[in-house]
Length: 188
Image (tube, rainbow, N blue to C red):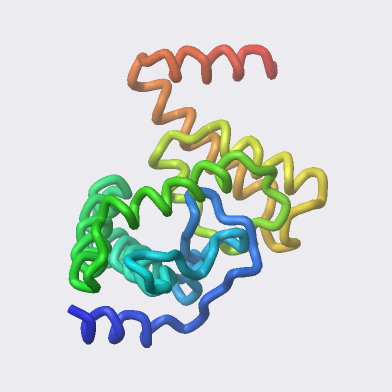
């Protein structure tokens, strides 16, 4: 498993740790850049040793992006498979999944709650759309409108992602759909 993990990590064209990335890590639209949130520690202590985490996050993001782009899987399905690959790699390295996941979840929460001030301009928004994360998309849009986001992240891209999300949510008749409809009515 270690050689397979190394092979995936070597294929990454660019690793970027200079931005704020919702959900801890993500990828560019073209898949050439893997983003890991700038506040995410590079390692954690387990069993008296320092465990570097980037390689496991890279594996997850590469598997997820490939399944979405090459096989046309929905984000949630690709994410589940990528999580299983990440889990297998973590365990093969002699690390318990529970300890690794507990460490990661601490930072997902912290990073998820912070203000988004440095979002990558080419961050693939599909995971946020597919997760129906309207609040996150709105915060990203506010960051762009306040001119605090990367210059290439455009209002029209985020607004379109929000429109697609709201169209999809409206079709399902959920509380979220009712909320989205109320927001649209209030905006008119």
